[in-house]
Image (tube, rainbow, N blue to C red; front, side, top):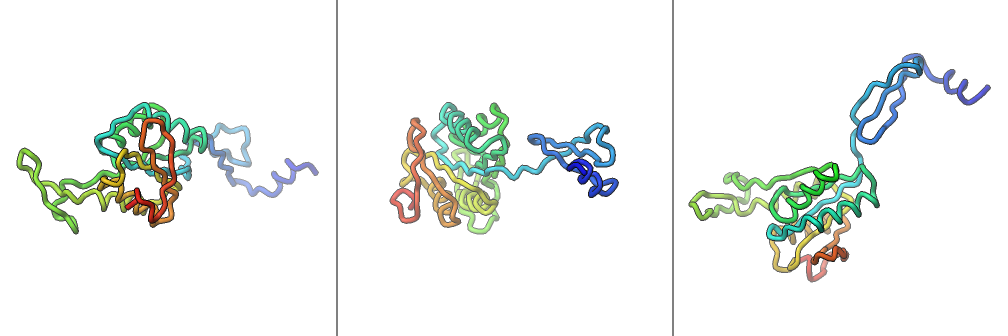
Length: 197
C-alpha cells in the first residue's frame, strides 16, 4: 500500500486540508482533489515588532531600510506595531504601505479628557487635550505582545513617550533595541541601562 493510498483510507469523507499560501490559503476537500480550491484568510501569527520613536524625527529612508531588513530576516508574516503619530511612526507607516507589510496602529487618545490619569493641557488655539495619552497607548502596544521592540530616538534619555515604551517593553521581557542615528545600527537596551530610564 502506498502512502497516498494510506492517506486516502485514513481520511474520512468530507474532511478538508488547509494549505496556507502567504496571507491567503485554500481549502481542498480530501474526497474531491479535482475541485477548485476555496480561498480563506490565514491568521497572521508572524513576527510582531513594536516601533517607538521621536515625533520630530521623520526618517523614511531609515524606516524603509529597517523594514526591508526585518522582512529578509523574518519573512512576509512580519507585523509592525506603532502608535500612528508623526515622525518615526509616520515613516514606518509609509514604509509598511509601500512594502505591503501588515501594520497594527495603536493611536493615543489625545481627546479623551476623562481617561484615568488624564492631564489636561491646552493647544495654542485653546482646545484642551490629554497630555498623558501616550503611557496608556504604550501599555496597550506592549500588552498586545511582541517579539521585539525597536526605539528610534537620538536623545532617548530626554524622551518621555519613547522612553516609557522602552521601559514597559523591557519590563515585559521583550528584547529591546535602540537606533539613535541614520546608520541604523541597533544596540540592545536592558533594564538599568542609562538610556532606558
